[in-house]
Each structure stands twice: as structure tokens, then as C-alpha cells.
Amino acid sequence: MPSAVVAITGASGARYGVRLVEQLSLAGWEIDLIVSKAGEINLKLECDIGAAELSEITGVSIHNNANLAAKPASGSALYDAYVICPASGTTIGKIGAGISDNLSTRSALVAIKERRKLIIVPRETPSPTPHLEAMAKMSSWGVVILPANPGFYNSPETIDDLIDFVVARILDQMGVSHSLGKRWTGEEVTLGQ
Ligand SMILES: Cc1cc2nc3c(=O)[nH]c(=O)nc-3n(C[C@H](O)[C@H](O)[C@H](O)COP(=O)(O)O)c2cc1C
Image (cartoon, rainbow, N blue to C red; front, side):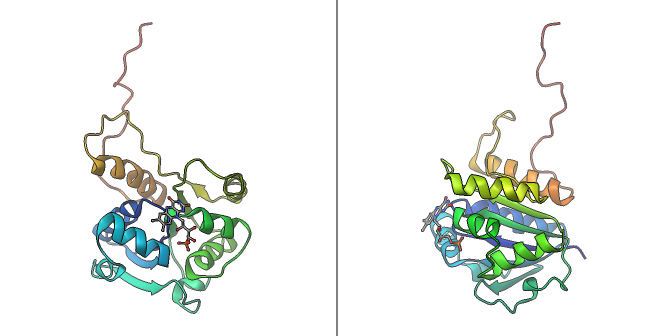
């Protein structure tokens, strides 16, 4: 069964993380989920749920962000992908500096040292220069920086459409087949020749 580490950290956009976990569960993935303290605040504020409710989703095992002895902290534990969604600027800055002081940052550094797929979904605007520099560095290490920037070319009608746009891009990066949103066909726009 494919497996992923998903960390929901303290940036706005907890709904992206929840939708991602739901979709991975539907696709039959095992998910080792980490929710930081600030992530919990945003989960409550934006989704009106706690991390405990996410642990009831099929395939989800929840880990305490302070537990550096948990399974995702070791490179010997194999995962197909690691995703931080949403990723706070603080978590991004730490990873870029090689700091692994909690399970979210440690699992990201494990992905980097083991050369595994790591997807980081930042949500902060405008972006502070230290976070931009950290993201540029991480990108050069092979980390996928996938900002929570939904496109509007598919004429979204609901907030769920906007969330699905971003989650679809994450699932594409993970190689998970899904039916979220429409794919561009090239026939949407006709230009005069
Ligand atoms: C309600 C709330 C919303 C926040 N939104 C953001 C945000 O959108 N982006 C961001 O980078 N930080 C945001 N922060 C700040 C982070 O939560 C803070 O830097 C925290 O230390 C991140 O820790 P963590 O990455 O371990 O969760 C927010 C904090 C709170 C309480």
C-alpha cells in the first residue's frame, strides 16, 4: 500500500491539508499525519475540527509533532512521499536551514537526506525574503515548492473548487490518479491565426 507523511503546520489553508488527507485515504494510501500546535489552531479556526477527528479517516495514523521518536523521524521507515500542507514560513525557514526540531521538520529533512519526494505548500503573502531564499535553496535540492495559488482558468464557483485546484496539483506530483477539477485540453481558447 502506498504511504505518505503529511504535516499540517500553522499557515492558513488547513482545508487544503484536510482535503489532501481525504483524497489520499480514498485512493487507498496510508497516511502518517502530523499537526503542529499552530496547525491545530488553524484547523479549528478554518475547519472547526481537531486533529483527533482526522485520525478517524481510514488509513490515517496521527503523530505528535513533538515526538521525534515517531516512525516518520527515521529514514529507515519507507514512504512514497512527504507533504507539508499548508507549510508555515517558520517551518520553511527551519527546513531550509537544516533544522529538524519537531516531527514535521525532521520528516522533511529525512526526505531530503534520503532523496525522496518532498512537496511543500507555502501560504504566506507577501513572502518574506528569508522564506523565498529557503524555498529557492530547497527547490535546487529537488523539493517541489507548490504554493497554495489556485488558478482561475477553470471558472471556479466555490471555495471547494479553489481548494481542489491546489490539491489536484499535489496529487499529480504524488502520482495519485484523481478526478478533481478539469484538465486543460488546449481547446478552451481560440486565437485568430
Ligand atoms: C491563526 C494563525 C494564522 C497564521 N497564518 C499563517 C500563514 O498563513 N502563513 C505563515 O507562514 N504563518 C502563519 N501563522 C504563523 C505561524 O503559525 C507561526 O509562524 C508558527 O510558529 C508556525 O509554527 P509551525 O510551522 O510549527 O506550525 C499563523 C498563525 C496563526 C495563529
